[in-house]
Length: 172
Image (cartoon, rainbow, N blue to C red):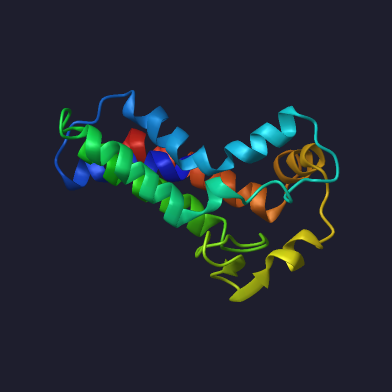
């Protein structure tokens, strides 16, 4: 979410554009869009599936960014402002994908749908779909509690990005 706020703000500054307030929640939404499958898993109360149902089509960068540009590119013929949204959306999605490729996560299938390999940027690693599926994963709700309701390094870094983004938007 913080990544989307930062990107919207920086795009506005880079192009000397006064950002309307409603752009910020849309940027936050765009940066969280790939996690729609995880939110669905939590709402369906899937157990034991946790990240197994996660990291599918919404986490295929080539597919999602391609769809974004196809829809917004065609629509921008009629509404030119959508070119700006295509740029913001692309950067928000890339920010999410890079974030999911760092640290203690499982990486994402950067080359999907052509290759079912999960790539980590740091620490560098490549996992097969079978290796990801065989990881000892907890169910979706347990992961939410463990990740966001306890002071883990991931929770602290996510909160820092979010509050840093709010501070950046307010200050600059």
